Image (cartoon, rainbow, N blue to C red; front, side):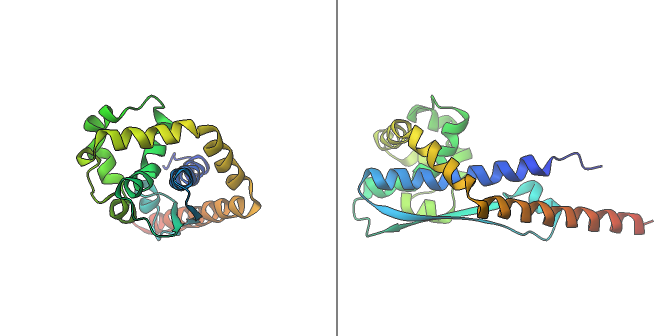
Length: 181
């Protein structure tokens, strides 16, 4: 029997996706850039995919050309570091040596491309610490921006769509299980 609280899981996924993308946005704004955040639900074909993958995917599109390598790296790593700060606000650049492998596995191709590497441990510690500092110094704005996004009716409806889709998958899975001997 499946004891997963899908409401909690999908709401967490949606919130994490917004934190990630708003983290990019905050870092970009720090350097004078603007951009657009998009978070959308993913409709997988199996319950197993919802157990292993996030139910929401996001994208931050920056307006303008990023010519400064350090700024590009900071904006690129800001999303994943925002997620890490959610669980450990006292995270330091030195900690990345310890958690670097985990973070590297979680980097999206677009984040890796901005950063210029898939291994954050290869980055200058000063650059990572600067990113963490930007995020911490703007944490209140980051939180309020995420809450604004989550408050929009459209985003509540998207969460409901994912939950209804999962419910249909559960019913289909239960029906398939009953037909199997």
